[in-house]
Length: 130
Image (cartoon, helix red, strand yellow):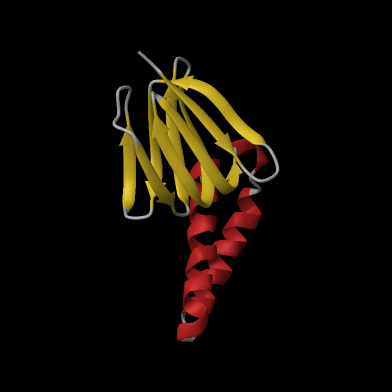
């Protein structure tokens, strides 16, 4: 028994694969999906999406969106989804450092926006293997 994973963004289909497991960053924490999972709809937050297929584990940096699980199909509609090959690790490191520095003097009004940029930079670095 396997899962079908489909990850799309507003621009393109990023992944369509047969998988054994899927782990997504849900709004309230990471969710693990296995074959036979009950139907589910969840908001997604910025983080790392992991999935395992016959060739091993793969990762994507994602930011925002929704996920639906139904009939062993995991559909992810993400605002952003990046594969390791499309991530500029040095730029992500600079973005992370800048966001960390800005958080030191951030106002309440800008803190959430800065935190989102920091989480995306951290996810990109995790996916890029840095």
